[in-house]
Image (cartoon, rainbow, N blue to C red; front, side, top):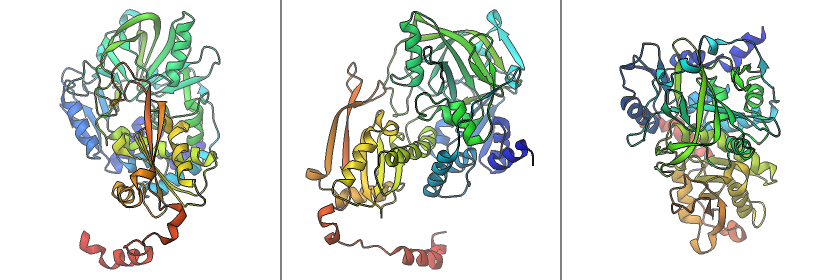
Length: 482
């Protein structure tokens, strides 16, 4: 079997267009014709994301040539996430999480391979030929200030001092035919790279890529450790290097099979009003402010390009669903690396946008074990940014079931003794609970919803069937629920 055939068998797809065909085969994608960029695409995407609906591929968009398409809600179901990661599509989340973590731990870093040409170069527009309005960038939310070309994209930057490349998913506003808004939340790797250039009085080179391999997009939207390039990380998961083209303008590596790639520079003193934009918290929390601008010098795209959108909406939405899965694996790994034993389950819950509510199940081994797990989860790399609540429960609680978790909080946690507060934790401009002008810090609540360790053996027993009896009941009487 050739390497290409082996890869197609393991991952099920080669790039975005193969992935779309795979989704149609699984019944996970719907084609939509005639939706407007002004409001229809955003409304349909919000509806599908909130209800865990199918991926949506919009075509025949009024005002645009047929074939200029928009894909949204790509990862709004666990099946689509599993397919993208090369995992069993019908396995339960808890099993998928362990399978994914094992793949993470056993996959090497595989750097990208440079090639001279790729599908992204089918159409090339340089200088005065650049016109970003050729793409049907939607207005994603009703009260957004404008169109956002980049929500399901990756901003590609390079550290000017250390040389490592980062792919990060940040929002990119369409200002006009050759200028893009360049907002990045403080502390993110792309923001650090950009500020290093600006501190030196130099323009920041950047590529905005959309419609790349879905695995590479998931990498760009995930907390990869500093100095680890997303190309290398995703290449290891894939088992083969991603092909990239050296950008003629910036020198940055461009995904060779991306649908769209945009090259340009952000300059230290150039700013333009950006926002408001509905964000992952479900609010217009970041307001309107002057943000850096990308002056676009070149645009490359495939014939009949597909613009990928992954707009944040009030959670639970598409972003919350795929980030809940990916971030949960990273959080579990961080807990285990920190030496927290017997972690039985982890879930970064969708209702909190996968950040504001972190759930950890442990098998208690010693006094303080639950508080240790809670504090580590709140402050480790995967859990630290803009968190709010961490709930630690016993191993009999399914952390993916919010009803079970809240039952544990209500029945095992005495408010006077079960809650710790952390002050001055890492927050950001998108935090809706922080008074405007005071963003930067927030607090965290660690809720110990485990049976009190000192008398856990005398805690009342649960009035529920044993796992054996539950399995027997489902086998015998489950038909009554269908």
